[in-house]
Structure formats: structure tokens, C-alpha cells
Length: 294
Image (tube, rainbow, N blue to C red; front, side):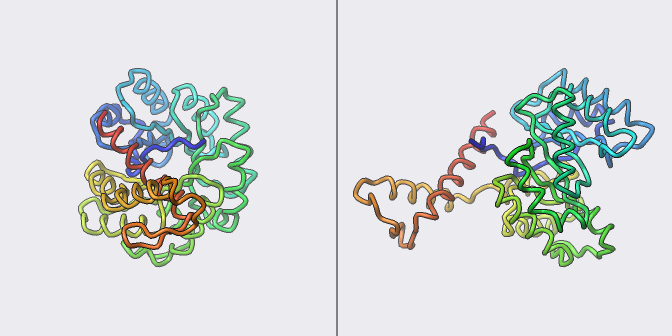
């Protein structure tokens, strides 16, 4: 059974910056992604591994989900990153630039060989054009591997496509974003939206978060603590949606409605197909409340 937990805000933290990792203990992020890849210079990769291991050994991150992004296994740092990351004991490992289902099988096997416990998930970056054409096959591996989450890498995707990003519209990426959501949902895994680069543009961030929420993403990756509040609000179920979801659950639980496939709930025609989503909304709202209560 999938564990419901909030992933409204997934904040990248530079793995080489011990002060930043310490500060992260007080930030209102659902998920912290300790980064060994893009945020760390080549000559700092080794020390960054040690910094992350030290930070996690000290603890203090509370209920926040901890993910470590490693360098690709095809790089000179990837295998050592994987071993060090697994030893640090995060909730999941995030791997960049996957392109095929075979990549997932290889990474999954490498995690097992390196001693990853069963609870440790595999998150992957969807940021290469080839991956877009293989999304269904990649997602299908979730049935037999640790694959748990797609994370959109829109900056790399823009580079590889030679596309011009026009936030918050993201015209060039709409197909890739929607296909990624569809593939994730077909496999029952999580999908996290890409980053918004302009830290000072609060209105633009809010608009892009709303777009991501409309597309169906579970949350958004972020690059600065100032972006947390917006993502936490936008990707949380709205109060009226939670109220309606509870009403739907109550209505279908009423013995008087046993066997009925369609009901009127608060004036809205509601089918059985809405029941599962109602349960998910309530579960997410309850998970957020528990998380914020500490």
C-alpha cells in the first residue's frame, strides 16, 4: 500500500554547503533533496558526500522526507555517490538523466548491490528527450523495482531541446509534462514538477505552481527557501475540496446508498469513480496536518 505523505515542496539543497544543510532543519519543506550533482563543483564532489553523510548522521530533520541526488552512474562520480548516499540512509535516491527502462533496472540492481534497504525508493529525473519517448516503459518498471517518483528536469530539457522557456506558460514543455503525468499515474507513482528559476518573481512562481497543479503534479521542486510558502499553499488540497471529499466518502458509506453508483452530494452529481479521489484528497490533507503539527 502506498504511504501518503505531503510532497508539495521539494527543496534542492547544495550537498557541499554544511550551513545550508543545517538551516534546512528549520525550513517548511516537505522534502529536502541533498544535491551531489548540479549544485556541486567537480572538485567538491568527494567532500560533499562526506558533508551529507555527517548532516544525516546528526539528524534533526524531523518528518521531512530526505532524498539524495547523485551523479549519473555513467559518470566518474556516480558509483561512489550511490554507495555514500545509501550509507547515509535517506528515504530515496534521485538519479539524473535516465532515458530507458533498462536504465531503471540497472540503477535498481546497483542500489540492491550497494546494500539499499527495502524502504529506500528510487526517484528519477525526466529531463532528456529520449526519456519522453520511453515514458511508458520507464514507468512500467515501477511494478518490479524501487521506482517511486518522476521529477521533471525542465532546465535540462530546455537545453537538450534547444527550447525557449517562457514561464509560467512553458509552451515548449506542455507535451512532455502531460505525458510524464500520464505515465506516472498509469504506474501509480508520484510526479514532481520542475523548478522555477526566478527567485524574485513571486507572482510567476505562483502562476507556474498553479499550472503544475492543474496538470496533476503532486508538488514542485524548488531552488530557494523563499519559494516554499507558495508551493505549500498551491499544492495542498483546498479547504472546500477537502470538505466535499469528506461528504462524498460519508455519502457512499451510508447504508441507505449501498449499491448506488451515482449520488448527489452537496448538489453535485457524484459517481463511484470520484470516491477514490475523495479518499486520496482527505488522506493528503490529513498527512499535511500531521506533518505541520510536528
